[in-house]
Amino acid sequence: MEIPFASSERSTIGVEWELALVDSDSGDLRQVAQTVLDAVAPADGSEHPTIRQELLLNTVEINTGVCRTVAEAGADLERSIAEIRAVTDPLRVELMCSGTHPFARWRNQKVTDKQRYATLIDRTQWWGRQMLIYGVHVHVGIEDRAKVLPILSAVLTCLPHLQSISASSPFWGGKDTGYASNRALIFQQLPTAGLPVQFDRWEDLESYTADMLHTGVIDQFDEIRWDVRPAPRLGTIEMRVCDGASNLTEVLAFAALTHCLVEHFSTMLDQGKELPRVQPWFVQENKWRSARYGMDAIIILDAAGNEELVTDAVARLLRELEPTAERLGCSAELDSVRTILRKGAGYQRQRAVARRNAGELDAVVASLVAEMRAGRPL
Image 1 (tube, rainbow, N blue to C red):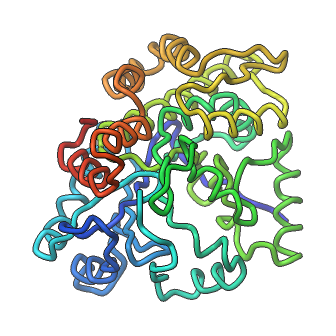
Image 2 (cartoon, rainbow, N blue to C red):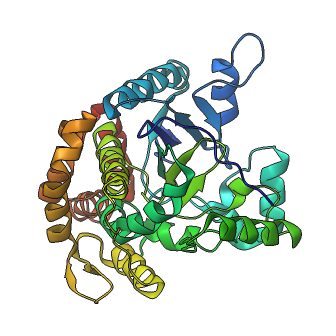
């Protein structure tokens, strides 16, 4: 089969942010997504351009348009949040985001009444019903299809950097899992989710997709739910590894790092340079280490198996990307990654709040709600 790759302007950017709807008093999830979507729907009955439904009725997703800068994407997200709050504030519902809700029970959540979601749950059963998880997805435009797969493989060398700094799901069903990102391991239980196959030729991706369609594993390409994947319909690479962020500052930090990485590797291709690549088994190990240990992970850097503390690797990567960030106009947002290195990732802040409050996780939810309101880590 042929998979056309849409024409896209180089290094344009788009962001998707999944938001939980929580009760202002109890901190538990509220099943009011349809109420929100009905309230913000355009008068002509069409779908809202930036506020979308998700798998569960406790969730809405906000999307940006096609943006040229990370700051422009941030302004789009702020407008959507304001529009949602006009509906949720009178309902005594707050917006919250982290990779998982600290204490909500997956059994109590209702699935959105839509055929694609019903099909997913029917097929995946127990694991599918546990998808009480939230993420941040970043799209970056690629102007030439020939660049997509080499950049995807290169980006995999930095996947643990992104997963470690964004890790925000230590709790599951009221218990500390011992993981920085429990979401990472839950999500990969779905068919076609998890790490991507590293193909060398676009024709190999087309053959893989044809096999998946022929055998009924997927019904359309976007059901390939890899941690980073091509998005042929949009002409982008989509980074999906990041846990949900509790505040806009961190969302834009993850977006800036992704934006710079893709542009950096694209520039290397223009210059005829070889892009970095590591063996699939090292990529798999890096994913587990960063999910388990977060900012304390020792990650594998290269094909030779050299290793380094992830925070040192991130700091070094930021220095390398500074010229790219200046060119893309996202230096300030990229610098916010350094704030995460200094003050801690989401999972660390959540555990600190739990310790200060004798393990009470409603206090953790309150802190996440406060960070969403403040727009920055607290």
